[in-house]
Image (cartoon, rainbow, N blue to C red; front, side):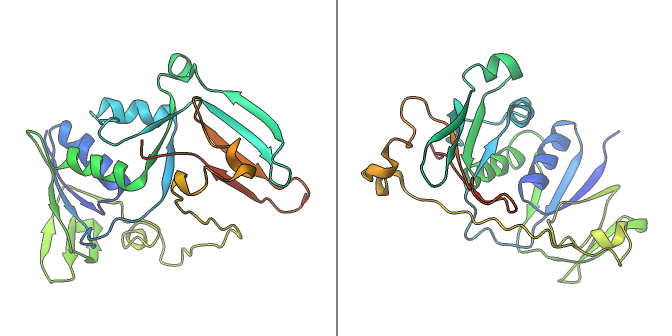
Length: 230
């Protein structure tokens, strides 16, 4: 039986859900509050289990300019001395897919392509913020006042989800973890001539490097780098 499904949010989770549901024969409508005028985000790693799932959906790793990583090493953040290294060259044989890295915007663009192309494509409405979800009625109300009904509503609208309060108690509050992450992109040509870092730049064996603060035993501090946008 084909269902009418509304997905709130056209990020990575929302688009992936839309692709799988469309391929299963369901009718999907996506509401996204942004205009996708400027896609932001740095890079991320695709673990083998995630890559296998994406491949089953028809994801093109070539079109997304994905980079394959063949090692995972840790170095001392102060001396840059290698502390350990894991050989990942056999990941495809062992786990079904290699460890890969991808620019978030490239990943998102390929998911967007899959969701909105094909024989049964999702209907995507941009600049369409949701005002309220009426879960029991299967109805959503947009900020514009328009309302839509569905057999199933999927809230994939992130950390500030408007749908969370419809499922959980309104007393549910986000909790501070005390941890922070700063993500950024640096063109390789900007650092490849720095002698102090030259030996760490991936060559014929690209990989992920973790710089670890080995002196502070009470607080976890580390920096992770890897290449992307191949």
